[in-house]
Each structure stands twice: as structure tokens, then as C-alpha cells.
Amino acid sequence: MNRPDLDPRSFGKVAVLFGGTSAEREISLKSGHAVLAALQSRGVDAQAFDPAERPLADLKSAGFDRVFLILHGRGGEDGTAQGALELMGIPYTGSGVMASAVGMDKWRSKLLWRGAGLPVPDYALLDADSDFAAVERQLGLPLFVKPANEGSSVGISKVKAPGGLAAAYAEAAKHDSLVLAERFLGGGEYTVGMLGEGANLRALPVVKIEPANEFYDYEAKYFRDDTRYLCPCGLPPEREATMQDLARRAFTVLGCRGWGRVDVLLDGDGKPYLLEINTAPGMTDHSLVPMAARTAGIDFPELCLRVLELAHVG
Image 1 (cartoon, helix red, strand yellow):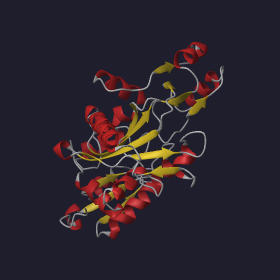
Image 2: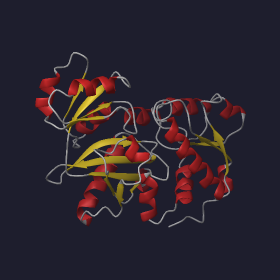
Image 3: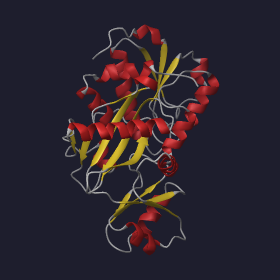
Image 4: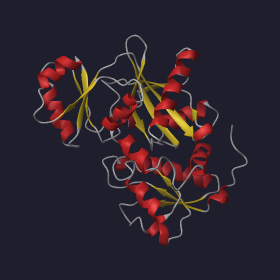
């Protein structure tokens, strides 16, 4: 399924924007170096650009024609870098300003999905004055606590015993003033890569995630070799298609475009619920969108070219 019609020279001078200053800098560096090598291997005039080391305005003065945006977390995945690129008129990959900002905010994503009639797990917003015991009773145990505006499982905790929510809240609040407690769903964790836009938007094959440790945390995502990823995911074809359709609707409701990843949980009855969305997902050797693309017959350099082809302004 590679595209011989994609001419690498047509992209011009490309900045691979990665690194940055967020809590996910280390992962962005890994993703960025992988994307940079892949684009260069296909003949693209791609160059590294780390906004922690030089101002974004250099993109304009240095004459870059488009940007492959692979910053993770705040400052790159939340609409701020997208807004700067819009003002400079430089085409960039992935979702626009609004979709990036909303997608980064787990609470507001859930509000929009629920408003559109899409299923999300029950949750509660927490602050320092919350009745933690009441929330534990409301959502049941175990439950998950997470900052609303961090990715890569930064600051996330699993609360298994009564009375544990207060400490989990304190940990998450180190990373964000907005903290969510979320009902645990034990039917399995899956993810759906998205590629394209409009009528050409497609859901890639579903990946099932089976972490060897307590849950799919930062270490499991990026550094452990005993996390299992199943693609094909093992679901019957009709159930996989249902999950892909749900992911496609979730992606569209938030106004996303280009590429991304939608994470889905199943409850004990096998019903899918939307967990969160990633508008600039990882592109490391442990990452899930490249894995799904390979199953669909798209190798990593080709995936990078296709994402780059969809770069846009506005």
C-alpha cells in the first residue's frame, strides 16, 4: 500500500519539530529522531528543529516550507505551536488549533463526546476540597486518577484501596490544576490509529494493549519490553469495525484531521468507551500508530510521508 506517486521533492524544506520543554520531551525526542530519519531515507529535505533550543520564529526566517509537528504534551500538542504556525503561514501536520487544544484536555473532550452521544467512562472532577470518600463510593474501586492536560500517563495513579484517592489527587495535582477520577473498566484496553481527513479518513487496524505491570503507565508505554501489543487485536471483525467507527466519530466530533490515535476501553460486557485522544501520538519503536500502519501494509517511512502530505494551514 505504499504510494509511489508521493514525490519527496514536492514537500520542499521540512522542519521536524520535536523536543520542546514539556514533561514529554524525552519521548518527543525519540519520536522526532525516528521521523527525521524516515523522511530523510525517502529523500525529503528534512531537518531537526527543537523549540527548546531556538525560537519558533526561525522557522519563517530559515525558509521552511512545512513542519512535521511531533512535539508531545503542552506547548506542542495543545494548540499553542499550531497557533504560532498558523500566524506564520507555515503548513503543519496534524490537527488544528481548536482540535489540538480540546484533544489535550481530557475533561473537555469527554464533555464534547457525551454531548454528541458517544460513550465515556463515568468520572468526577477533583480539587483539594473534594469529598474523596464520596467519590470513591460513587465511582467504585479500583479507579484511575489523572491530570486532565498531560499525556503519556504522566501523573496517573490507580487507586485500589479505600482512602487512597487523596494521595492520588495530590500526585496528579503536581502536574495540572484540573484532575479527573475515572471509573475502572476491566474489559481490555485498545487503541485505534487514524489517518486522513474528510471522506478519506480511515481507521487503522485496532491494537490491543496488554501491560505486564499494573496498568499502561509511562514505563510500559516507552521502555518495557514485556508489554504485549496485539495487532490484529483478536476481536471478531464486526466488533473491531464497531470500535473503528466509534473512534472515527470521536476524531471527527473534536474536529481532528490528518492523523491521531483514539484510546478505547471495554467494560465487562464488551461495550466500548472512549478514553482519550492523542493528536500527535508517539512515533517511537514502541508506538502504536506505526504498528497499526504496518498491519495495514504501510511501512514507517511511508506513514511519515502520508502524514506530511496532509500538512495544512487553517
